[in-house]
Length: 270
Image (cartoon, rainbow, N blue to C red):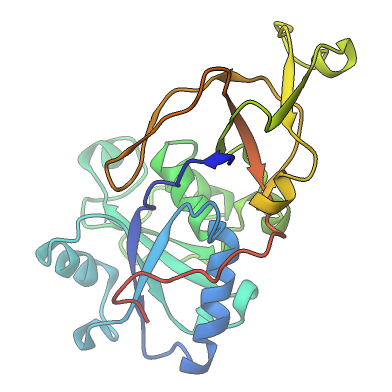
């Protein structure tokens, strides 16, 4: 049977619902986030949604950031107010860290009392987090893209939500070669056709794809790709998956239109 490596556990952020967020909008909010994080097949980020602590109502970002630090949450967190309503049209606050002295010296913030935050479309939240995490872009760059002038002070305002440069989230789902697949002998076919190998440099000796009909049952998109030798893999339970001689490892895309099981939100999340 074709083996697909389990995805690693996705990082988690706390998301606080403020009193202004309508409770009736929670399901639509969660659905928009699920679309953007590519749940359940290639989940990039998870949220643990909770009602905000009572003392957060009406308080400053600086106050909430300090309280999060005191509670042991040193990473970014999410605030969901009235602008989080509307499903995919909604937006949330991505709240990061206090400005550093280097950021003050570089003219990005007026003091280290500034807490960095940005308004982000709900369905773009996971990708925004990923871009910041790998330094593909920065919160400060995105603020400038929204017309916010640097240096900012503690009370800076963000008038519109960042939307990942207008990226179509639905088109982005399933666009990564994220499925680590191992096919055993008899489960794949190979070709040395020049037309199929021409797109690769250097040109491989062969290309491989799953046998007809297999991909559709697994939730992956079949395509000719460069194989690599299959190596044993460690399963989440600690056991090792081994493969017979001649097995190949392939990187394929997940099919977002597959009949995936319902996404399970983290324990403790609304």
